[in-house]
Image (cartoon, rainbow, N blue to C red; front, side, top):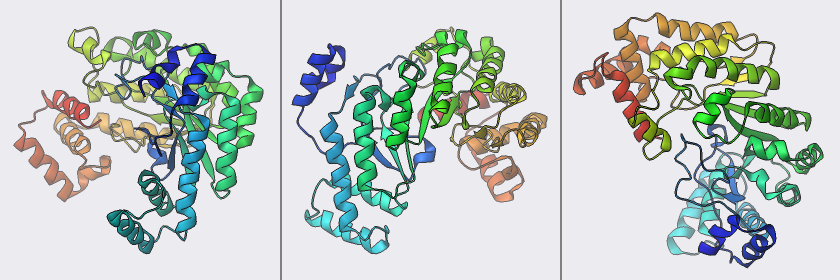
Length: 399
C-alpha cells in the first residue's frame, strides 16, 4: 500500500501503472460524508484529499491521496449488489437478523464490510449514494462516468448520487465533461467554498480564490447539477469576520447555489489553525460574535433562491434554515432573538446547545431540558466569563 499511497506524486503514466498493480483489498469506506447523506451508500472512489493543506481541517492529516483503481470500485458495487440480491431489499428486521446470524457463524458470502454498508443502505430505502472521499471528480470524467453508469445499471432505483468536489478541480473541467458526468448519473456536488474573501482563503491555505470558486459554481449550475456550497462562520477570526461574512454572501449572490450549508468553525487539535490560535496569530470569535457574523451574512444575501441549511451539530442556531428570499426575515429573527437574550440566558442556551441538551432556542422554555442545562452549568462551574472557552474546548473534542 505504501507504493500506492505515493503514486499521486508520480507522472500520470507511472501513477497509472502502480494503481493498476494494486491488489483488491475488499470493500472500502472513507471517514466522512455530509449530514444529508446519513442514509446513503458510501462508495469510495478516492482515498483522502488531493489538496490536504487547509489549516482548519484535521480529517486527512498524516495521510496521502490516492485514486482507487476503476475495477476496484466496480467490485465494490458488485459486492453491494450481491447483498441486495440476497436480501428482500426492504431492510426489514428479519433481514437484519439473518445478516447478524450469518456474520456470527462466518457464513455471510462476500465482504462483511460490504454487507454492513449494504444493510445500512437497505434500512434507509436504497435512495441515495455518496461518492467518497474529498474530491471524486479528480479521477477524470471517463472513469467517473464508467462508475456512475455501472452503479445506475445495478441500482436503477437510486434517486440521488452526490459527491464532494474542490472548486479548483471543477473550474479546470471542460463544461461538456461536467454535463457528461451528470448524464451518466451524478445529481449533486458538495463544494466547500468556506469563504468568499480572498484574504481569508489565503489565511487558511484553502488553495483557491474567490473568482475560481465563482467560476466553479457557475459551471456546476450550467451543467444541470445541483450545487451545495458550504459557508464556515468564524473562519475569518476577529480581524476579518466582517469581510468574511460580506464577501461570502456576495459570492453566493453571484453563484445562486441550490443549497447554502453552515458549518461553524471549530479549531481542532493538531491542525495548523490550532497552532496559529495558540501562537496568537488567529483570534477565535465568541458565540455572540459568531451570531453577529451570521446576522451580517444573512443580511447580505440578495437576489437568490438558495435553500439555507444549518444541519451540523457545531452550529449554534439550527433554526437558521429556510428558503430564500421568503424565509430571510424569519432566519434573521432567530439570530436577533439569541442576541436579545440577557447574558445568563445566552450562557444557558450555549451550554444546552453545545452539550446536545437543546435542539434550538425554543428549548430554553422546556423545563426539563433547561434544568439539565442548569445542572451542567453548576457541576462544571461554568460562568458567563468562561463559557466560550469551555464550549470551544467541547467542540474540539467532539469533531
